[in-house]
Image (cartoon, rainbow, N blue to C red; front, side):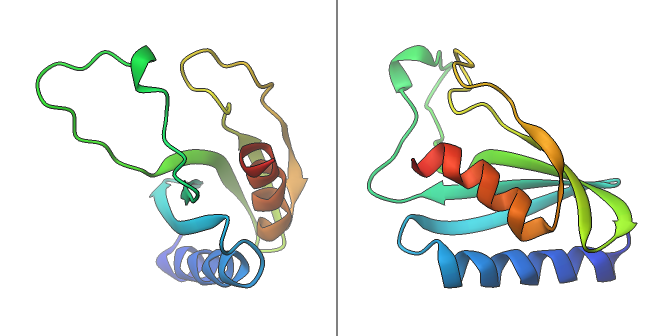
Length: 116
């Protein structure tokens, strides 16, 4: 995926979060790997992972960003494949959901699992 597509996706999702998900989602970032966009967010209201289930070596460095959805570029900015990330990365209690849609729709499906 070229940098123009990456920038366009980032701008669309930043605007979507700002317009529709504040104050539930504090921040968003995207890491690009080939044709995939790994979308991470910070959920507000003090949400943090259950640290009792995580083993640390040394001093823990907490990153409040959590992966919520992986988008795969199909060559069309209006149609992306997506796979949601499990809500609990340790126990994977939530089912992973996949499908196709506009970036904003894909994000909403994943975010609704987290914020609900």
